Picture 1 (cartoon, rainbow, N blue to C red):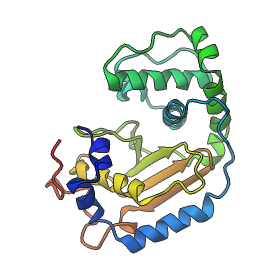
Picture 2: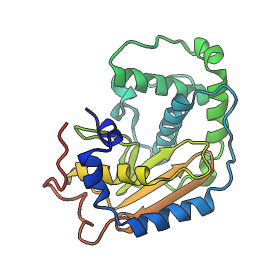
Picture 3: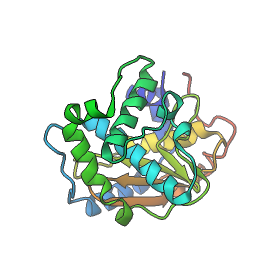
Picture 4: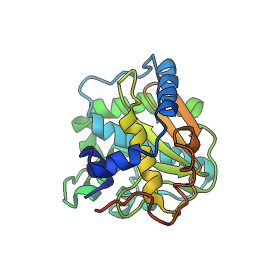
Length: 240
């Protein structure tokens, strides 16, 4: 069972993680996001595949930052473990990576596509990705080392970890996309980390709203739990 599915049950583990969060701090954070996310700059293209585009944007962000740092990255991702980096350029490249990621996670041979077959099958999704990535150079922060494109644990993996900041890359049409459940998921990553990576802050990139937030982990945690990500001892027991 994965971390995501365990949290979705909203059982003992979910509530144990929730107990680490200061509700007043979380409410302030949610309000900050609501005040800054009232406008969607890149509405979804009609007919787009929402989950596929969301994953494609994650891969596009990884590559954008890695290229600036001049570091290799693709083979450290889920897709990169089962396929070579696509040779085609442009937004269709990231759709192909997203398809590879889905295949890696399902352990089934779902896709056998050539670049030419991608275009008619995913035209709307490719167009959607194209409009979003056009804003990267304006919105994304300057890249920093250490750069981990797909941090992973036994129970889960995350979008990106850069210089201690754990990223959540979100492609959503919701005007108010941050909820307590989202905060619980971010804190759950800190719980399963158990000192594997240095994590001192959280980042959320809202691709359709052209907005990036970064905040220290103590902005949402109760006093006494600020070292949750560096503790090698399980603060919350996750039985998967």
